[in-house]
Length: 392
Image 1 (cartoon, one colour):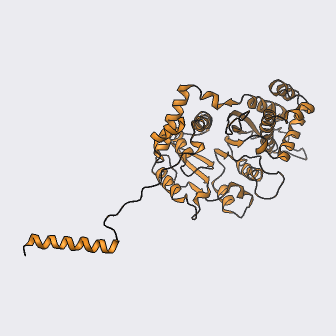
Image 2 (cartoon, one colour):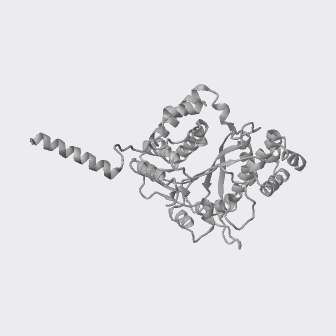
Image 3 (cartoon, one colour):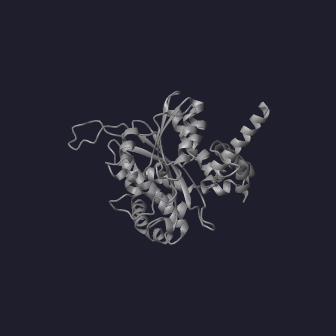
């Protein structure tokens, strides 16, 4: 038998043996499931991300940060980490800043089906120049901050305070019954603000929430309306601005406004701003709070008003002396005028920008779609399919 024949017989025998072991003559690789597009992949979310979040983060950072420093960020990122990718590339890299983030996402739990996807995203971000290796994703719900023995609270305290706090609460900050001792967004925000009030410089709060009768608990709206009514009675500038903007000038018109979706939106948003303002002004020393911008769009088809709203709020320390109950101190702290700040907050809410309306301009829509494609491609999405999906 020739050497060639021997080799051929050996190959045939090997092939037969392989088929016996595997059971099939051909191995087929499984095709990865196509990544599905989700509501927050819409261009309107990118509009908010770019024209509100990034704009006001950049404005703050250019005032308080030196080139080459670190931007500290607290957020609720999705598994693709789109916000973190965008802030890193658009804000941090041009300024040679490192982005140190603490994120909360239940997908980080070992039993989560999305853990692998989140780990891939983290690995991708770790290779960027803006990544700070001290960053971390915690596999918890933010509402667990109420438990001081929890990892959620310990990490938040360890990493904080933060330059930017981004609470993207798409299920709504006001949906739960208030006054409960268990895990609620109200309690979590209170704990988070306690961390933030340790900060020595200005910081930004980005708050996204659902708005509407079905997304705001009646007791919550009652309490916010009570605070609104107090300003109507005791703050002339607030009463005048409210009358002009919302046709709410007294207790009766306030009650009537709550019967309509537009009125619920106005009372709820102004009330939430007043709630946060109360935390700031009651500190010693006090903080100033400014509502920088309000944007909204419609999630529910046929919604009368914008039912998803994003608010950008800036907090600035006063660095005044502590309140002296015995009055031995002669130095007077800067007095914070709640009436004035509440009036300005109301005016900002009344200037709510309709994102859906902005995106009717083709140039703006194309710009947001292109920006989303860059983000989604980095996160391993099919951008050609995305462009089709956007038009569907």
